[in-house]
Length: 267
Image (cartoon, rainbow, N blue to C red):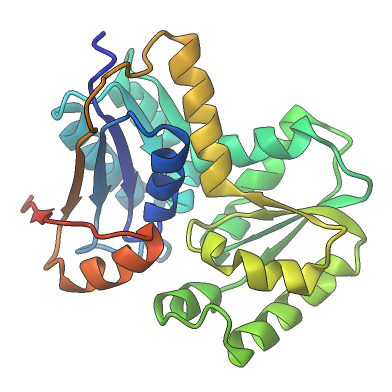
């Protein structure tokens, strides 16, 4: 397989751009095609069958772009549709944020328990706890849904008193369990890292799902001989399913740079 083919990254909306940002920093030679299903977000209120159907559609689109790897940057899709995506991908490797976060968490065990924060759908799926326990049956996992974090991040209130107060309320029961690490189980949450670090204190290690996914992608590409060796600049494409204006505005905050042209596709 040609190592200069792009990596396909997909999410239900804008959050997966934190994964793209981490990939750009960790793998600066890799081209990326990002797909955000902005017309059908949020996925969290939809049935498993519907999410599986959407995930299969997006996987098929990206496979049609000749990608060499698929990265599931949506925690909801990773929790319920990874098997469907792997079946579609065939020989193309598939990485998801939950697997990456769980592997990074158990690779450096901390004293104390493991906290996991995410959207209600991700937390209710118990996907992080199940994967962490599969890797380390002795792990103590304490999960907490944080439904207000996504709208606060999209509003740009990254260091706002309301966001700080909300974080303190959400994290109080988790911190009471003497955790040693906290998994940021939503791709919006890396933007809150400085604030969350203040709330949890220096003794708690933050597991950034975007960074861990980029690390796992780098390891996998190198192991399979698929890493790009191009000398020139990589190509970045951003594809959405709805009018891209809001995606462009919020996305540039998530990515930390200009998105350039955003493409729109109709199903």
